Amino acid sequence: MEKLSKHYNELSGKDKRALNILTAVMLPLFIYFALIQPSREFYSSNKSLYQENKELIAWINLNKGNVASAKTGAQARTQDEAIIQTVSKSAEENNIKLSRLQPEGKTKVRIWINDGDFSDLIKWLSDLSQNTGVNISSISIDDTGNPGKVDIQSLLYQE
Image 1 (cartoon, one colour):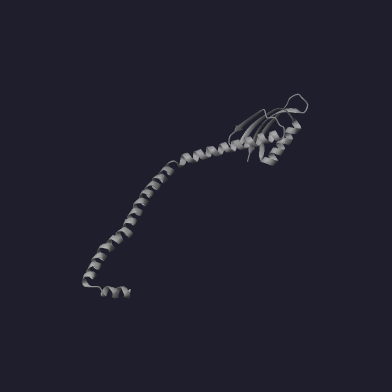
Image 2: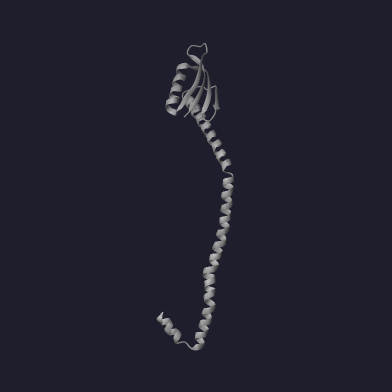
């Protein structure tokens, strides 16, 4: 800094005045273009971004109920499909022929089995309960007149 001051003092009066004028013109330009203009651009772009986000939050709050009901419906469909798939897959693996399969509610399914082997069906229902968490809510077993063969109607549920 001393070097600059010494060099400035050695300048002629005309050079000192030109340097002072140049400094008086350049310093405000530098302050404006290096500090003020970028700050204004940053402020205006973030102000518009703030407005967009504020509108997005208002829209989200307005549609929150629609999203929640759609989510609940999707979960219910997934649970229905899950118990149906579990029961179907297990029946197929155990060579049980399901006559009819009907979902009831979110976690229940009603099944019909015609002319099934009683011991195989009881074993399958027991395995289904123990291995998959699908339990019997109600069951109706009817004799078919053929020895060891029964018709079953049952309501199964999954916890």
